[in-house]
Amino acid sequence: MTFHAKINGYADPALHAEGLYIGGKWLKAGGITVMNPSRDEPLAEVADASVEDALRAVDAAEAGAAGWRATPSRKRSEILRRWFELMSARAEELATLIALENGKALPDARGEVAYAAEFFRWYAEEATRIPGEFRHTPSGSHHILVDHEPIGIAVLITPWNFPAAMATRKIGPALAAGCTVILKPASETPLTAYAMARLGEEAGVPPGVVNVLTTSKPAEVTNAMLADPRVRKLSFTGSTGVGRTLLAEAAKSVVSCSMELGGNAPFIVFDDADLDAALDGAMIAKMRNAGEACTAANRFYVQSGIHDAFVSGLAARMAALKIGPGYDPSTQCGPMITKAAVRKIDRLVSDAMASGARAVTGGKPLGQDGYFYPPTVLENVPADAAIAREEIFGPVAPVYKFESDDDAVRLANETEYGLAAYVYSRDLKRALQIGKRLEAGMLGINRGLMSDPAAPFGGVKQSGLGREGGVTGILDFMEAKYYAVDY
Ligand code: NAP
Image 1 (spheres, rainbow, N blue to C red):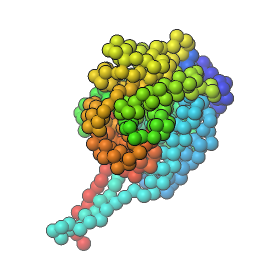
Image 2 (cartoon, rainbow, N blue to C red; image 1 turned 120 degrees about the vertical axis):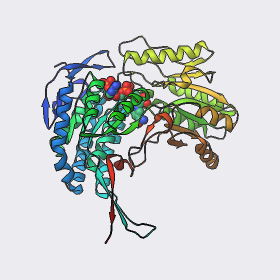
Image 3 (cartoon, rainbow, N blue to C red; image 1 turned 90 degrees about the vertical axis):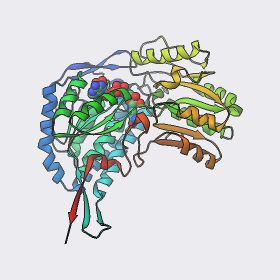
Image 4 (cartoon, rainbow, N blue to C red; image 1 turned 45 degrees about the vertical axis):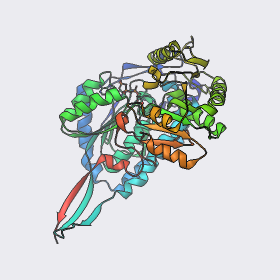
């Protein structure tokens, strides 16, 4: 085993698994190398599922379905609650594991574990409050009774940037609703998903209710599951490009889809903003996970009166961050996920600089082991540069100057994405009025962080379909059934 189980306190073999988790059994191992992005070296090897393995997982999810659906919601709730408690009790080991395979700094990893566990607590509570309806028809002809039933077997596909939270944000509501699931985590960060499956076993999740598989053939394996008529739900979090492909695939068998896709969040700072609050918020909105977040501020629009003070304040804070391996407790900015990610950031920054942007701090990849890019602030960035259109997914803050409110709104909305947006102003009425004109599913008003399990998370335009979390999240895993009743 190549797994560096002793790195920095991560010494819990009970949480470590490398095989497929199907029908409550751990099967076959080997095939996919998981890298340590902080050191550019192998960390572990996990199993590589074939199409046959995936269909076996559908069999297992089907075998577990009737029992789980019939399990009283109070019992389902208690299992989720226990899973939350186990994640909280093992938070440090999970955070270290995330820091190891994803590279994010430990404080970010700890934050993710707390956020991820909270989805199990929230949906443990929501499991017992599944709504129904009774209505009178306007014509008086009959009565309308609406029940909500579990939608059926759900395939859950998650990205590498939040390996714990993106999984619990789907598993929590699915299990609360009474569905059984097959989770396919990203190949870069499968160890966290397998560790959570171990904790799920311990929490009492029955065999077949949660299945986890890793594969080097995501398209083949997913398409086979979507073509299986027993699968009724696809819940995907990842890039808009892959989301589009999966929507087309799911259309063939009319599988219900929830899509949490890419973002290109504007961060708007008006002249009347509290500068320190805006800088604090900017650091969170930009630097959580070293910029590898779908809600990351991707474009900073700063009004001319506050522009220079904002740029110098942001550059000072960014330059002061300590870069290092994610699992080193003193690190504030960890590596990117892959070498390719560093190359993409470098391309976007070089392109912006070739068109007149200036790096106030950073601006070049760091030549060291691991996939590091330094915190960077760019000013004078042309509004039509590629960096304004593409997700940077790294620690780079391009700043654009604007004059009027109308300019800010126009520039902010000039994108195919519509996930998150941030507005800073001391005038709450102005901020809310601007918020109303912004094309985004989520708005941070004088706040750099909006994610919360109790709130609906999701985007408009090409950032996705549906909402996760909140009181409506459970309904994404349910179908309404209408009874026309005469009595
Ligand atoms: P990605 O390349 O789209 O991959 C996401 C997942 O899809 C991975 O598990 C990947 O598996 C799988 N996948 C790739 N191609 C597939 C195919 N043809 N069929 C089935 N599955 C396929 O995205 P990523 O690079 O991991 O994540 C970053 C993206 O996620 C960013 O765009 C970010 O904005 C977005 N994101 C959105 C949210 C949100 O809530 N809106 C949250 C987090 C991230 P492999 O790893 O095996 O390739």
